[in-house]
Image (cartoon, rainbow, N blue to C red; front, side):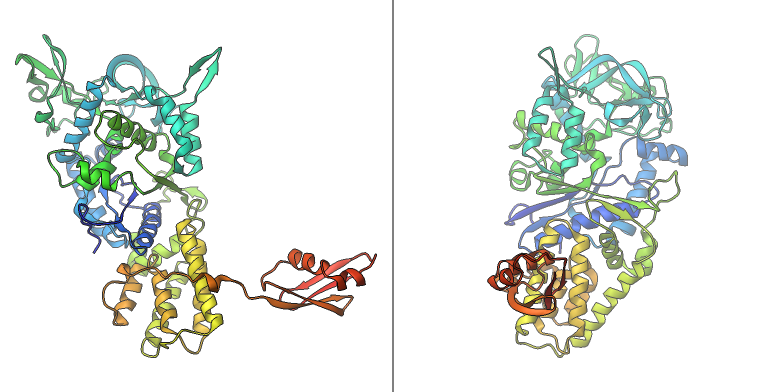
Length: 603
């Protein structure tokens, strides 16, 4: 149902979430939190009539995956295949997201990294991928170079080892040439402000004695490891540095049992003669291959371009499809990637536009950073032993309960603290909805409800619509609970009330609402219906009459909104001639306000 004909469908909406590393531990509830919030937004947009494309894939190259393979003593290719299968089939397919699996990508697939290498070649030919000897960040535990952005304080972001400086020949992308453009464009981006602030600070423009300087340094992309795409460069004694011809891509990562990092400044690929030794594509003479692999942040710097064209083999991104679906309409992910993935993606996109490959310079129209889930106030991490696996909660309570509970923990952009307390209450809430709907399925009133009920319905629709668009999922769920309590107390239910309620709940709890929809005998899926629309005439608050007293004696009445504040009521009362006359020169000691009933001035 969630497959999209990317070539012909109208009203496209590209709904993207950051694809995961397929580690052996599997998804934790923090991942489910991020993915659920993005999916709710996508489901809402689909119910607004948009053709939503919500792909998923696996960012499986790099130090993180390789380090775990080293600990397990398993070749990273075997471990990655096992982990991807677990992620996809026992976790991602069960959390209720509208993933379009037809366009799944894996960065370790030669059909993918062929184009990662192609992108490297475009930068190389444009003079933006240079090799130079420089003092670089060296992690003694990971035994490889790190980019500045991968060093936190003085430590490796992956293993926390103290990073040292080492002189090495490295490949760098000249991101500094784009520093001012990357900075200037931030003013126009519809992104979370904290992410834009982090990028401004990292780019770090400053002026001394009239000279402009930047904190930003060129991006070091060489890695002296095994698990990554080989850099497509050949060194020839006669011809010098030669790019691998595009028609000879991909340069495949060779299978080897000697894949452990060396710590010598060379990749394990340097010890594989049949890989290293080759012929020069220019003169046909003996030559050798580059043996470093590229940083896995290059893999993820363009993956959003590949998703819509994942089935195309003759080019990385189909021009017509790319022009139709990109830039990404909504991207949701973690703010911790502000100066890594998000900055690198912007740089690669700008370069590809400058070289004429794509018609836009910014990759994501909107980016929203979700909050962080904690456990007992601490960030979840394997070292602390507080990572929560979602699998048992899905088994015990169901995916709908877990989704709704996670979104109810706190504001989506702030996160919350995960505990077992409360999740059973969400399950009971969904059970009550199911039982209530089934109980009334054969006795629904065909006519609209009374005026007060219609007003409450349309106010709720307006509230839920507004909250979902603002990613205020916790308050949307609270409003759904409040409205449900009112519906439960009614002796009869109108058909429009029940169906509207299910449609509003559907993005949060897709399975149970689909089940009820089918029980009601409706045709088609609930997720292919239109989200309820509010009628503005029912949003106008009816006015009430309030008695205004002075020392307990009623002196006049005023009309105002039933939810008017005490300050509003006092201001309106003081404007009446009766109160002005009776309060003549008296000092008001205090005011007693009972909303909907009285306002009493005590003099």
